[in-house]
Image 1 (cartoon, one colour):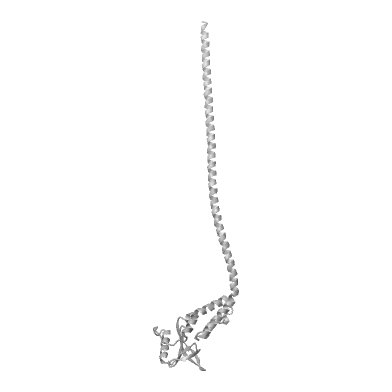
Image 2 (tube, helix red, strand yellow; image 1 turned 30 degrees about the vertical axis):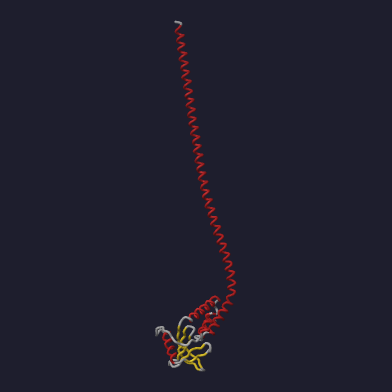
Length: 260
């Protein structure tokens, strides 16, 4: 009878020991679980920090790339702007030089105009005496031209020069007044370039050729009168162009001198 309590006690002690062991194991497991959760939370937080750092790094890298692109574009724009500024500076310099030259040219225009007028007048007076009054009138300043500026008058002189040059390349005829031996009469004039100047009386029985060396009209015989008549028809488009056999108003030496 005395041994039962002992066994019962021993059973209780063993049960207590087992219970204590179970509780201890449970506490350790809970602690381990808590540590695991904390570790996972720490790992997640660390991963978030890493991800945030990676995102910030990517944003910074992208910003750096953008700044590099903008820097390259700015450098290119600056280089282009520098080139344009250099070109503009050069253009302004050319303009300033041109303005200086223009002022010098403008100051010289009156003298240029006078020289052109004198040379053209001298040319006309030394040329065959056809349409002399009309040709000199182009050179002289008309009353309505007095208000024109120097450039406009020079343009007028240039046009007169062009007309004079055209005289050497065509054939022309007109009716005009011929003053000869204190007598003035109507005749038909024929001009062949600048090498031949002729007249023919309305009745066709008299005509002449201007002799530049003698400075006078010389009569033509019947054969030449017929050629002058043919030339008048050619000038008036009444006859097909053909070869004319006529004495020249100038000599070959005079013509070579004019060309020189």
